[in-house]
Length: 252
Image (cartoon, rainbow, N blue to C red; front, side):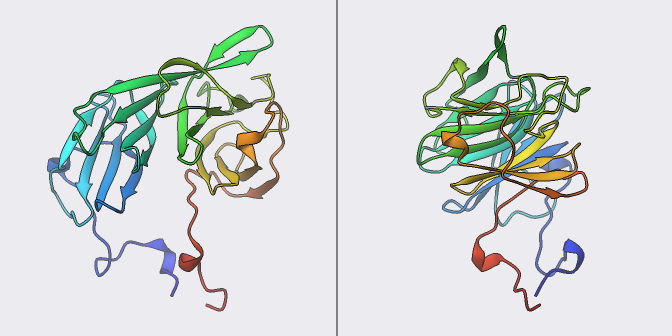
């Protein structure tokens, strides 16, 4: 039966909150089913970090462990096979924490800085938000909202060899009209979150009040690519893809 109004209910939900959690400004969240752990990115301006809790945690509980980050995170994606946590940072970089769970975050991190070609040379990513690691091809898809004062300069980047990439790294694909002052066919102004189903990329375009779908993005030639589909949605912040068995029964 559909949840009425998507409101948390004490009978079947748990809330993690309180001083002991150490969480100030939670943004991205990911689950590792195999270990039963919840990973939360904290966008705290003074102490950005990622914290790990047991899936059964509730109330004012301390994390199992926390790891400081070199910048403020917006979203995360955990690769359980490689035991790597990919973190989109708002300074335009990706932090990669290798051996994340096995070493409880003590293995350190490396930084990927996406670089993309322009008509006059190259530029670096500015303000990453959404992030997805495609394990089958070891590619990383990230969204860049760009300058917070512009609603026309959003971009999507694809980075190859994510498991080993480090430092300034040229992107393999960029969905970008090439003119930050104009929205272009991409409709990307502030792409704040992304989700990938193995074939299509879904993008929440906040200032454009839409959810966009880009097909075959990993093989795309890039450029001013129009989305394959677009749906009106008031200021969407996040997007997730649910498996069929969790979808609402249309008869209800």
